[in-house]
Image 1: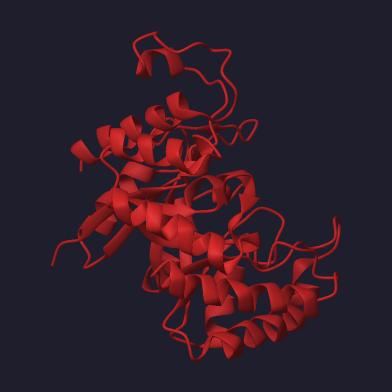
Image 2: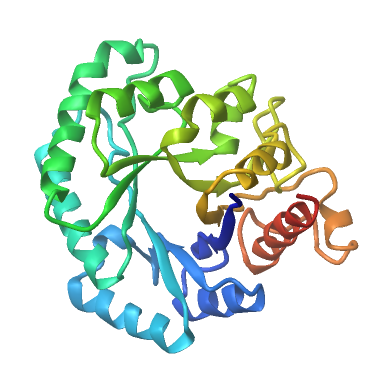
Length: 284
């Protein structure tokens, strides 16, 4: 029983231009993208015809869509829900065009200072409506553990899976986001959630200052956890989400060829993130 890892990534961190995204993916030998931003539009705002045209471009370049990196669930829990549900229904249609079974989603921002547990029932009510809308689609709704949402810590991610009890609801494990929420033992978090994890976001972070760094350069225990994943029957995606600003060791990774003055995203930093992940995979 061994796992198989397939590389994908948020290629909009290299550029919003779809052609540059495809160039950068192919330069790095990555044949999938987690589609999020394209030609200055969020994926959820693409028209059906725009989505078809992008899919044609992807097809010509031999690039598939691992998941729709949607913004669904990334509104305040106190915001009106009906318009957001309609947007989700549009994303479901896009999933058919992009031939992907995964849609990345969230569990709503909680008002600052409030106890997220107080909003548990409303979060579950809304998610049941998402799942009801998706029941006739061949999709799995992936919950990402994002900062400041209901499911930002392992316990509440697990509670969602237990409350919803639906094969169309599964988890993304995002290493950096858990670090930025000061989850102190990511191996413990992984072990708690592993039966529901079907997708991995590869970005690392430091507890001190919560800065995002390449895989293996932070406190996310990525190598240790990937070694555990490798022992399982996991067959799925490792999705690069660079989010890279300046960090100690940046020049070392690129042999000093990359300026410390680069912005947080761009082709060069996507390449850095991809190289860091490849280095980790060699050590598994």
